[in-house]
Image 1 (tube, rainbow, N blue to C red):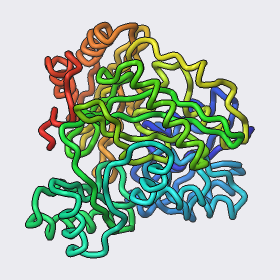
Image 2 (cartoon, rainbow, N blue to C red):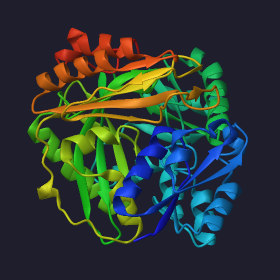
Image 3 (cartoon, one colour):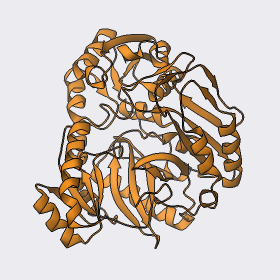
Length: 435
């Protein structure tokens, strides 16, 4: 096991990882930008180093500065969290070159699975149904030809995409010219890779994902499903597990197929297989996230397994000490993402409490929300024995949560969980006006 880990991230996920390390008896090193000099993650770690200016490119994406901080601190491993460098094979190789363990998949695996169009081809050979689509298209003309063969409407997606960026819904050939340019430009800005591909648009549908843990000894387990259909412009707002749209037999079958697929492609680490569930109950593989997900907390609340700790153990070569038969999915867990609606300074924070209520956040009095980073302030997660109980607990917790000085989406989340479409479980990706 590692004795010291550097966390190459900020915000609530950096705080989350630091806490897991402390519980494991592992020393922590945080890095921070000039804008985050008073941030909670910088204060909680055993050591902290400023690595650059407020822009992410100057700090949290500055590979050399992060590596230098890790070497200076005597860290043995780096946990990238999510976002920033978490899916960057070049950074993973740089870690290896400098004798540091990257807590995530190895760079060879990342390179092989990072192109979403190629990944779909690999997954299609494992027995899972894959959404019809193409590899990277080199021009608007090639995109139009592919879309014509697949049939409109189609999705235009960034090959190296994630977080909802570089995605466009295309209903006709006339829309492709501008969409191709805009999606490619957005992808270059977000990922440094402007390649895009075409995919069939499945509608209506729900977004259901499966959480996987796989170690280097060949052990693979699926910790159930999460319904992530509450989205605005491809950005998730709320997640729940298990999905109210999936019955026990469907769940058992898709989990078996997912475990088999991950084992066949030789993946090691924490990962998420994402699917579209159509109106006929068929699962269509969409993509795989080869990192920790923002919404990992609902799975932890439902199953009792700490995914961050298991990421660290797997990276240290420790085998999973539980099997698929040990996974119990009894009850219901729901997470609301609490986002900032603009900049501000936190004047007052009151966090709800009680059994099975969790609020993962980086907020402390005086926290300044700047324009440099993601708007996520925290995640409110609740668990109960039934979905009805969970909804009541979530409403009460949202009403109790107070964040003053920073505009938030708390009221919007309360409206969502009181909406009959959501409370009935009969919702899909069109809930927030998508599609």
